[in-house]
Amino acid sequence: MTGRLENTLRAARDGGRKLLIPYVTGGVTENWTEYVDAALEAGADAVEIGVPFSDPAIDGPVIQRASVLALERGTTVDTIVDDLVRGGHDRAPLIAMTYYNLVLQPGHKRFAERIGEAGICATILPDLPHEESGEWEADASAVGIEHVLLASPVSSDERLAVICERTRGFVYGLGLMGVTGERSSLAESSLTLARRLKAITDKPVLIGVGVSTPANATQICQEADGVIIGAPVMRRIVEGESPAAIGTLVADFRKAIGG
Image (tube, rainbow, N blue to C red; front, side):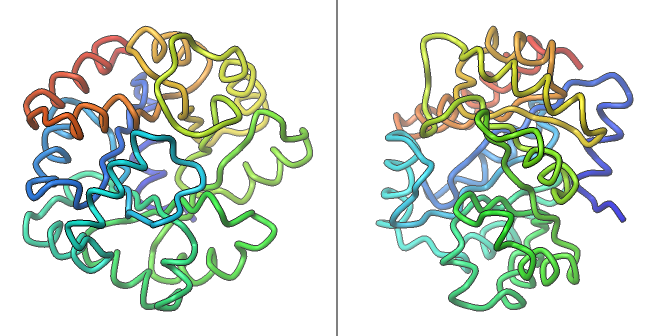
């Protein structure tokens, strides 16, 4: 049984649209939800909400800096949920990207129910390998939360097949081995991985990490169903750019990939 995120992405893809998911760190500024709204208005299909953690293993300098700023403002899971509930930001799927400690500490059921109050319908937990994620997947699914698994460029065909079978919402392909961040050129591994994944699954395949420009996104979308953009968005937010400017950035990506 598919959930809201996968149904939304499948419908858009099957209608000929390339998928676009920007990332925004929750709590990074007082008005951070305005960046979420701007991204959706500019053509995002969903938004990945970063729940800041003190030791973000996969995040590069830009998103680490955003997490520090958010934590210094006192950001927690509860403050993010409260901000989203106040603004009514659930008109499109929202995805919580964080680390397993923040799920384990309150308990699976409480965490899943809490984020669900804000319209968050999926999670990404990069430090929870699929071999250990079964309990969380079951507990999350029980309250309608889809769990998205990550696929690595160095994973075997056998492992990719398991990930594609188990993931919900979409398959998150890591464009390269390394932390998030902007790169001067697109890694060939992102295209190779997209082809490998598309050959074995009908679930939406999106590539993130190393997607830095609209031109990069256009290249990737020749093979993948869509892209996730994090560092290009967050660098501008950390530098003080307005929600309108982020809307323009997302619109540039949307225009480049079509749909």
